[in-house]
Image (cartoon, rainbow, N blue to C red):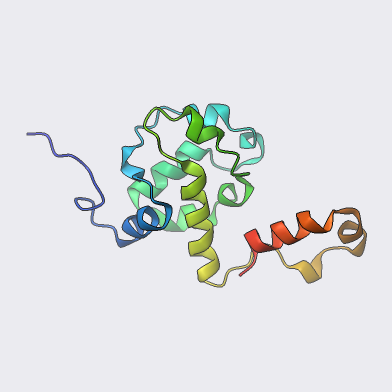
Amino acid sequence: MRVRMSSDTVNSDALKKIEEMSGQKVLSCYQCGKCSAGCPMSFAMDLLPNQIIRLVQLGLWDEVLAAKTIWICASCFTCFARCPRGVDLSRVMEALRLVTLRMNVNHIEPSKLPREALAAFPPIALVSCFRKMTS
């Protein structure tokens, strides 16, 4: 007898929350790796996008939320375009960022940035970054 995995059969409130927030069926991913192979930011990530999805599937939340990958994701949708199962990983990454921020964990402290750096960056880039990385 074959049992189909779903957020109802996997006992994980966190998985259900991520699926609800992202609108994605995380358990649909079968780890083909096409998202990671096409990701233009994978060179800078500590975990590849498909590894993040696998950790979410397994309920390893401490590892997921500690990963820098969810903050490096550029939300370019390349992963979604390449996914044979139609999983929009960009939306999953956004949901993971929101979960972290709701725990009041900032990943960048604007007041600690050097003034020279602040002067060099376009203001719109700073605003976008601060929205993404601070609670």
